[in-house]
Length: 200
Image (tube, rainbow, N blue to C red; front, side):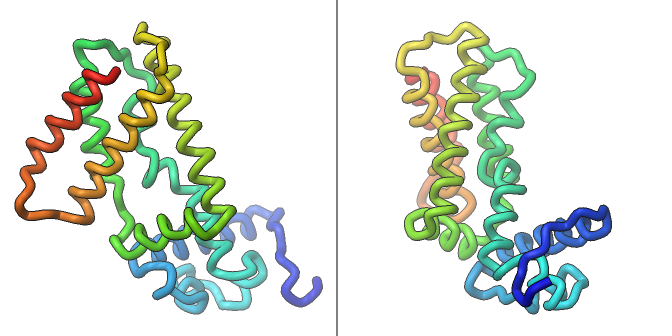
């Protein structure tokens, strides 16, 4: 194998080792921030040598990208886990939305610095930007389909769902990261739910 040539693991043990590096690296970046984490720390957290890390990844950016792809649905898009396999109608949509918000808040494992860095990368890093854009639209389409399957009005539904997703996203970021002491979050949650119910 040439120096700096990236290996694609085939054997089970090698695959598990690579997965371990992704998990440890992404968790460390979520905790400390991308720019405060180095490859040696990732190797230590994964209980492997730095050389092993470089066998599977060019640098920590590659580990971040793989981590985002692997764990984004749990951290950035937990809404889908709430809406899947559930009968939704106008009478219970408020309960579904409240559960969605609570799940979103609980799943925000990123530290504030890591969240800000990754969001900044969506403006400067083409690969990360494309991933988030594709996943946002996939989530919009999936939720729209669930609503359509449950008899909701199809008119401008993708646009309405996309607005609703961002209302929930902004609300959760306020609660998890910004924490303005003068704001009543119970009132904000109720207002967001009320506006989405009126919208959809």
